Amino acid sequence: MTLSKTWRQFRLVMIAIDSITIFGTYVIADMARCHLRDTDWPELIGGEINSVRVQAKVLVFLPFAWPVILNTLGWYNQRWRSWRWVLRKGVAASVLLGLLISALALLFERELYPRMQIALVVVLLPATTAAARGISTLLGRWMGSRQSRGVVIVGTGREAVRIRRLLRSVAFDRPTLVANLRGPWERDSTPDDHDTDDIGQLGPILDRNVVDEVIFAAPLEELPNLLPYVALCEEVGVTAHVPVESSICHSIPEIVNFHGVPLLAYSPAQHSPEMLGVKRFLDVGFAIIGITVTAPIIIGCAIAVWLTCGRPILFRQRRSGLNGREFWMYKFRTMEPDAESKLAEIAHLNEYDGPAFKAVNDPRVTRVGAVLRRWSLDEFPQLFNVLFGDMSIVGPRPPIPDEVENYDRWQRRRLSMRPGLTCLWQIKGRHRIGFEEWMKLDLFYIDHWSLKLDFLIICKTIPTVLSGSGA
Image (cartoon, rainbow, N blue to C red; front, side):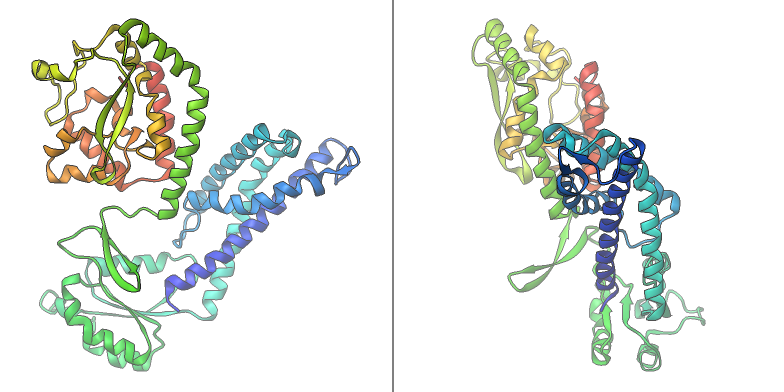
């Protein structure tokens, strides 16, 4: 069993402990609430045992929801973190759970989630979660001490140093470094290093020591030279990890199973399919809620455009979406009907140094259109694009196909994620940012995407839109 498989198994133990913790914390909070109200636990309401029968629905839901929230915050990371990090993440997760329960209380049965009990859960959870983390840590170290895994690292360069540091930082089932050998590609670079054995000693080391895994910290170009040593590991029954990083390609690779054929996939930025599925689920939910809540505003904007500018009310335009897929994007019309035909006449007003066009004082914009643009009301119809799957709530803004044709090659990577209503460029001030910086912000978002980053962008978009500073 490899180190990664051992960690995956122990992570299930952590999830089980956290599920028991949230169950116990909720029951304790219920008992404390009854004590503060000077009533017996379980509390009797209308002849029903509230804490056992009615709240059983909650107690079934929480053990599943709590680990999901913790995982979103990076709780189940194999590396050891400080207690300060544990408490900070515990507080953040508790607040998120409190908001989730409060939302369920408003949408469904309020008696299921008494406000005092929600507050007690949020207050108690950071402490009980930290205690559960401590128990998991002690259990993992005890299990690891009973059968520590032996690891041999081949290589002495930067990648080998990083692997050694990661091995020391593993929180559970910490492995033992049996040997660190010099690779064949390093013989000329470290001729005076007499303390490090050569890779030729790998066979005797495997014969004399308890070794579970061998990690080759080598460039991908050296793989042909390493195959005899990989065969040696296979001969004695030891797992070998071969290099996947290349000095030419900087993408993070992963092994994929293509109908039974193992392939090495190099993705520009690896995003978990599960988390992208959660992002899409949230997009649909936000779109439905947004369309419902803003329906009066949408109708009012439509009437304003129709009365002042006539038809058409909506402006639709071909835009480039995920990986260049074209779709119709909808907005309220803010310009004259023949605005696109006049683009060449005002090309000198363009404030960008790239293929995109942006002019603050665009003469084609109508008086009502200027108001809609200032408060971003013209973009409300794009909630339907989100609902149809062409766009996301957060993501790089969709460009015009003609602009994409003039992109530099590195700029095309911004199309590798579904376009969105808002992005980093939006909250930074739109026209105040140059085209190249705009592209770099989009690539930064793609490389560092997470649900947390989406949440922060949404939170910063709201005041930006309300102040009119994002127009």
